[in-house]
Length: 380
Image (tube, rainbow, N blue to C red; front, side, top):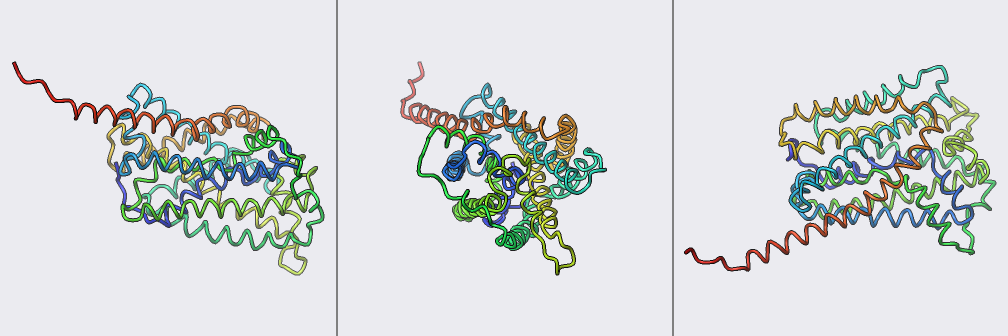
């Protein structure tokens, strides 16, 4: 059920991309290099291919009933007994993704910028900004993300170019020809957090205007390829400037690498810190998209249509996100939980749930066709 105006193909692609970019922004490429070693490039390519395939899978689910959110029609194809657990799983995943990025960003800010600021204060600020961005409706959120996201990405790339003179470890970037599939698969599995969040399509797709949906899908694929190129560029810069040993040892290798950017003739000589501050916008739009999804996911099943119901759910899930964030007080706790529990859950959700839904839809439609083809018995 829609309570806001429809969005364009461009809004859809930008919102979808913003919904996963910040997930691995600060950690990348730590897990990739530590698990994959000299074969990390092959693991990265596997991650990119898996993300494109996963997005295609969810689009096939959206095609079943394109005018409805998945949470609205799941009961009709897999029965409520399986439909409600899937809804709960979706809500838990969006909540944990918001917690993951909120806590991660707060710890980065405390470590590099504001060591005397309480973590809860930074988490509260992130949640409030995201709540404000998602408050009005879908189209306004899309416009806000478009205005913030694209210039931030372009400016980040332009400033990262200043790292080129410091690429003294380029020997570590090219992949080895000695391929071990097990190592490549494990590294890709551990680093797939890079694309956590594109599952937003299960909720966002029905908001796209009918005539723009095919174009929206093309834009989404194009945006994901560009995101892969963005991370590939970051991979070369971070690994080429810091080297594999620092990348493995640092908790946030991307931040450590950006701190190497200096311009002594500029107003500030640590320009790289400004780049990291820019990334806060990626964080805000990521959390805003999570809260938007949480405010929308259960409404079709509960038959809620008013904007007030959306906002009440938005506030409720923002409070849940903030409360859950208080559990993780350091990066060790955060990584331990998400590596052990969130990674397998996301793999299951992205690549296990769509085939189940597609199979359920195929069985349901086959039964409907058989029932329609069976002649009814004459009355006695």
